[in-house]
Length: 167
Image 1 (tube, one colour):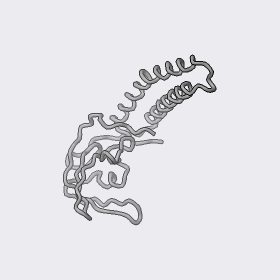
Image 2 (cartoon, one colour):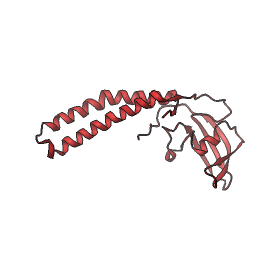
Image 3 (cartoon, helix red, strand yellow):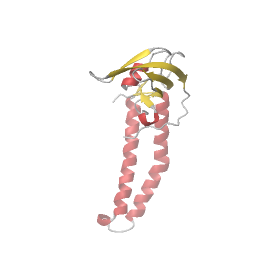
Image 4 (spheres, helix red, strand yellow):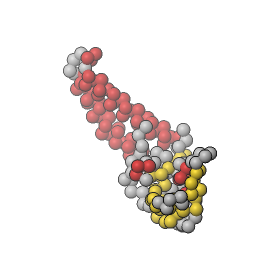
């Protein structure tokens, strides 16, 4: 697996594991116990639904633990004048002059609908290490590519507001 994660990503995962163990797990176990008390388990929808929720929670805990165990920890540090992890970058697309702002994050936090761009995406890879005024060439595949000009770089404080993706 060996996902690249920042220390902040790992901290969020550990917090989610703790929440799932201390809050979600006891409630799920209680729901299973209560549904089991309703009688015939073969036709008891509540029991099957409660078991499913319990199993999904346990699966998520195992997944997060495996992600942490196999992670390659990467630094969030970068030079102040160049694009790095957790920086917010304003770019202008060369082909039509459109201006967009993105934040560079790891793959587990990427969410294009919220302009959180993965460091492994074509745009994220092209932007990393660039400075204001640089032109970054984004290669999507062998036939599609485009250029963006970096207008502004902001150091973003990781406040933990963006969520980890669930798989």
